[in-house]
Image 1 (cartoon, helix red, strand yellow):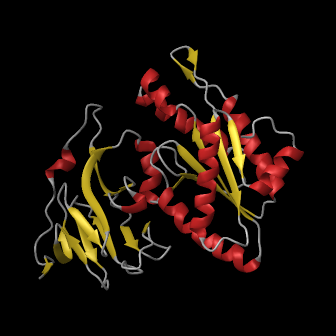
Image 2 (cartoon, rainbow, N blue to C red):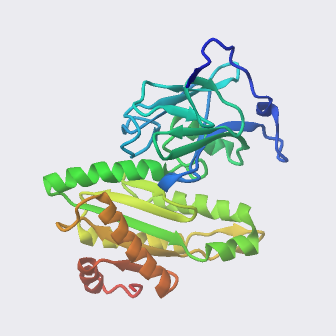
Image 3 (cartoon, helix red, strand yellow):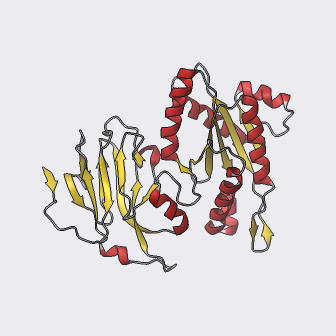
Length: 316
């Protein structure tokens, strides 16, 4: 049975008035709790609805064939009510198991999009409201660091992969981890970890081109999608990123925290059939760099030739 509560006056969840220990109000958001986008948070604001669907133009782009191109939207009204509305999707939109056309959301409601995608509507205290202010107008941005989200990256990598493959253009993907992140968290606390991630994002952004796609891929993993760059240029950039992060100061309570990176790099080859081949290869290179130790770069076989030519001492 399809539930349509258009005739019901939108109600305001009083959790919107709650505040956390910091004194900041709880902010409404949608959290992806399934698939590759698990734990991605989309903050809601009254000046911009959250559009959901398979098309790249959506704020929340889900690459799933059971999701329609323009599937649904989540709206925060000026009065504070929040509702989800199906946009005539093929497989429907469900809230807590009930198919809906338009439905007012309450804290904890689960929204099912397509056959497998699950979102949770909730109120959270945003520890970084300045960054969230950016993401309120651009859901493709990470709330903490301000760089692009993994969800946006997956869409963009797929798009650029197809284009580069058809036009025989250079395309490379660089991925790196902050070394010893858990040790930093245990020794200095999560607040310091947030500072480190923000500083890493800032210094890496300073050495990238405007057209480079810089992404927070996971908690302490970042990626950079590079177009029209030769393998030699990509290797040189990886080395530079490693250096600027390593020598950047990270002060904490009068002491400096040492931060280094493990980096993996890969480029488009003829054998690759889709974007996931490129992603899988760079992840394998990153894993090899992790196992080799801190402050290390690992790349594909062709890039290792470039490494040797450049006499890089930090190659795994």
